[in-house]
Image (cartoon, rainbow, N blue to C red):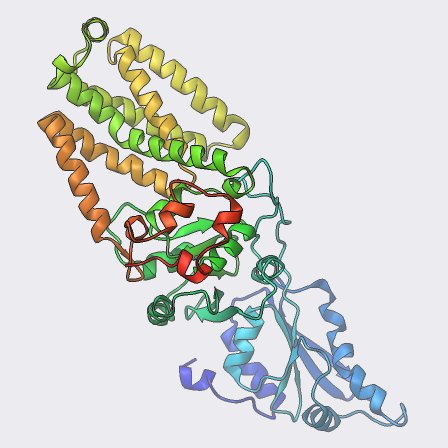
Amino acid sequence: MDKQSVSQTLSIELNKNLAFLKSMFTQCEDVLFESYQFGQDYDQEAVVIYCSSVVQDEKQNLLKLALQDLVSERVSPGLPLTSHDVQHFFNQRGVTDRAVKTPHTLKDICDQIMNGHVIILFENWNHALSYNSFSVEKRAVAEPQNEMVVTGPREGTIENLTKNIGLIRARLKSPDLKFIFKNAGKRTRTRWTYAYLAGTVDHDMLKEFERRIEKIAAEEILETSYIAELIEDSTLTPFPQFRITERPDVAAAALLQGKIIVMVEGTGTIVICPGMFHEFFQSASDYYQRSIFSSLIRQLRIAGFILSITLPSIYIALTTFHAELIPTVLLIAILDTREGIPFPAFIEALIMIFFFELLQEAGIRLPKPIGSTVSIVGALIIGEASINAGIASPIMVVVIGLTGIASFSIPQYDFGFAARLIRLPFMLLAATLGGFGLFIGFILLFLHLSKLKVLNQSYLGALSLNNTVILRDGILRLTLKKLLKGPSKKNMFKTRS
């Protein structure tokens, strides 16, 4: 059917409407058409249409529910009930159930059937009754597996958009919290929403965000990461430009900081826009324990990030170009363990990192009961076998193991993956230019981060000396008394470009 036919209004002839809808849902065997008769002599016909895979089991009672108001208005139950009575009643009185609509175009009816509505068509009426009966099995609210905390809320988002909004509304009971709903894709018609806190969000940033999402209205969206990738500033950088969470308390805190959040029906992931460099070292547990502990742990994470990208390259640079900087006793031990190794330090590190990453991916893809066992046992066996076979030295196994542990200290998985990716060019620079190559690598990395923008905001903007965010809630976390006092929250959390 062409677009013009789909946009037409319903006909008063029931058979004509059914013919069109059946042609639209050809070979859609889960879309059912059921005929019912009503009236005094059961001479009036109504057709109920629904998609059996996405509606509740009580759909057979919807015709009775639709006519209940009409029947109660009859003076005498013995009077005949006709389609004209149905049309007149609902046109004049409307519907009393908030879940009922009266669509009149074929396009609306097709869309609502796919969205879990039950459609009821009558003869001699160019409207339909549409009951929202969407019901698909969802997992219960539980603690997110990737963002566990020792103390604090245990709730996590699920695949139901309405319930996720309710979890956030329960924490921010303010009319300033705005939710704007959108539909994306011509085939998926995915329902999604973005939210912000009026009076807190930066106006220019919000306008830029809305300008970008207008361009993706026709894109097929299945998950929040689709939207994040479509609106991000740079697709070539390994650094994530938006934070991802499954915790409603983290999303509520981000809204209070002037952020924009994005949620999509069918996924429990929340995207927080924009994501600044220093925010990827923060965790929800930082705010549920004493500030001194949170500050120390954040510095530990930053040290882990630096080690994860530099430790193999530092080892390569020292053993290849700057052996004089290594203490004599340690140098002798390293040379002794490397005796008989057929590869230079760079190739040796490359091989060990390859197998380490392979084991890590295998542990993620395997079933949970055996995934961790395979990762640990596999690393021990392969490491020991590599040493015995003369492929790798014990010191290299230690360096790669410490590098992997350091990368696991980063709370955000996407940011940790960026560290794993940056590690390779640093190793190549160290193998070719030594310490001078590492120095060049740090300069290039800093220039790249300085140039990077997120919704026209500087990725490193909060690290500037004239911004107090990094001093109050960045590398350090002040006590809540000091964190919540002082300048207004809007100025406090605003990221300057």
